[in-house]
Amino acid sequence: MRRNLWQTGAGAILAAGLALAWLPGPVFPLLFCLACAAFSLAWLVQSWRQRRRPKTGAALGWLAALALWIGAHRLLVRPPDAIAAGVEFAVWTAAPLLALVLANELDSRRALDGWLRAAGAAAAAIAGWALFQGLTSGGRVFWLAAPAAPVERVWGPFLYHNKLAQFAQLMLPVLMCLAAKDGRRRWWWLAAAAGLPVVTVAAASRAGTVLLAAECLLCCFLLAVRGLSSRRGAALLAMRLAAAAGAGVLIAGWEPLAERIDPQQMLSDRRFDLYASSWEMARAHLPWGAGYGGWAAVYPEFARFDDGRYANQAHNDWLQWLCEGGIPGLALMLAFAMAIARPLLRGVWGCGVLFVFAHALVDYPFHQSAPLAVLVVCIAVVAHRDNGRWLEGSGGGQYAPSPVSTTFTVLPRM
Image (tube, rainbow, N blue to C red; front, side, top):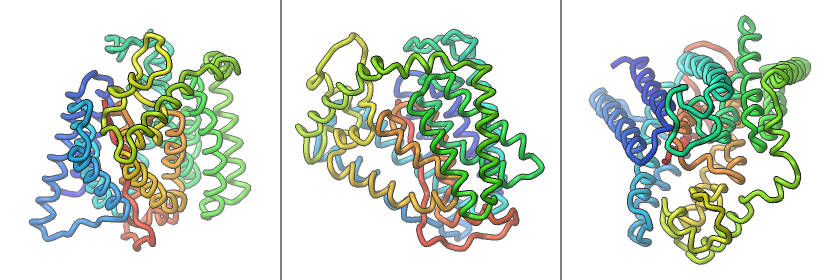
């Protein structure tokens, strides 16, 4: 199978995961994991037959260690929810395999350039779809069916506004880099980039809006530092993006966000009670944790209030990793984040992942909802090689090895 067919196959799996992630229950995540694993094993078999040794990196090593820890954790702690624990192990095992395939198949400047352009175009289309559907569908998926848990608005494939915001955080640096690099289509990429903050504001994601603004400034700074743009050009890019996004917000509306940033509402946010309960849970189950996938099952024992709604996640992934995986689980995720930080900043277009990690302090981007399988794409192509070389040209040569290797994935869980 030719290289572009492997890339297309991986993209098809991710697109299906993104489009169907709203389906309830554990069946779809498991099917997604099976598809990732089967596709990756087929690639590994072909690589073995061709005597090609897959190239790995430090971040894949940390991910492998994390998958092993999740598997071994069941020997130390009996999981409160066996099905959820199985799904957790499946996604943290299968998605890195797909990341390995993409990291190797996109190991050239030309392949990476084509993939990023395709990802940028897809992000623009999803932003437009999400905005139109969110404003017109009345909480129905594809304007047809209501999700299992009724919501006021459905933003494209995202049932939760913060999932949409995290997707925007991931893709904004990609579009900004394309706007700075591709002179012929600069205005197209700029308009596409502006659509991401517009739909995030319309969806009323408070943390998402703040992080996107900070991300825009950091991207412009990094573009100037890396030499992709002059200081004046980077400043112009930021101002043009702000102007385009501002015009879009005026049209789409910002009233729901204004209501959510009311100080009284923010102070009464139930997240604070969830954090307090999660901290008590973590302390009670040190050092090994309560069991992966078990936060929702264990939480009622430590709940401080009951407003009649189901508490599905801790709304703080860092705290939830401590609750479920104990000190080793949290340490592995922290080591992984530190390992990928330098390459992500050097490559510029992947730095949005660091903002997703920051968003994880007040939400759960690493838990629930298969749309975040799309994060496999971004960090798999950040890759285990020097992705920063993409900024320097569009030829087809191979990359030189990077001092810090990385491949990253964010995994879905229902």
